[in-house]
Image (cartoon, rainbow, N blue to C red; front, side, top):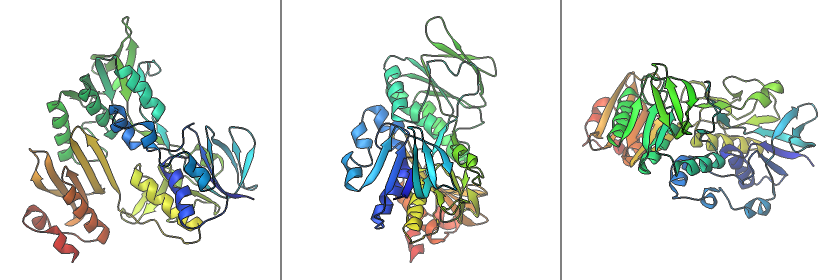
Length: 405
């Protein structure tokens, strides 16, 4: 009997399977995962796992026996290689086909490869899977000089860990500031200074042009200005690419991701998508977006599961994100795009502050560094559609909670 097939066993794929059972769906569920491991959390990889503060067992969403106990057919080390929409079946890399009543594409995204000569050298690593991090950790043990290419969240999180291990770390960023796609210039400046104060060398407006092998087994990372940065280990974090090829080959609509409606349904009524691979109309943003975050993967997958279980719930969430770098915990809610002003609360010099971002006088986003209470309150206000005035935010004696009634 055909049931629900979930292609992809990352955060969204696992969440969809779990939520289906929580909704009381008792039909067949097949969860198809490319990695040989049971599904696991990815955010700790660049932090606690790399630091040795967590292990593989603690990364798992559920222990190995959970899937059998919940009658979920987990297939690891397998990918879906084709979709026969008319026949309602998928082709598997392991051979054969699998029929479906409904199909969920939770295909995630893959690391964007460095588009420069020398990127294939053995000293160059990416950070996405447990296998990636195990490889990095082994090299980090004997490395002295580390070059990080890309100053996004992953790059800076890894740079912080490498410094904790006492390595010489240089971060090369092609854009004019760190985390430029995700945070304001004020927050970029704070984190750049914080890293440099802890011994990380950051060079912005510094595009890598090639990576050359050196006679001593190291590599030279060459930048556009001709400077060469020697390294025992290079970790590249220049973004990801959504895995949409399978959907495109099946003639499903794509728009910066697999295009879905508010309930996670693609242009085929029997195929849904969720997570990093999917773009969805987001009411909070007022447009279609593809978000790369745990929150988005979890919430989208829950909506898809609800639809499949006959209790549809439209996706309508305020986005939130986080990043841990050194002892600095950054928590963000909302979207800063289009914001024209911000107001700070707390003490930036002490590393404990928040930024409330406004567009035309309305609160649109909150960034908090080691100030969880402001983050929680800001997120609640955004979810409730309420906005303090900039003057109220600037007055730290004003209780933001009072606006919630």
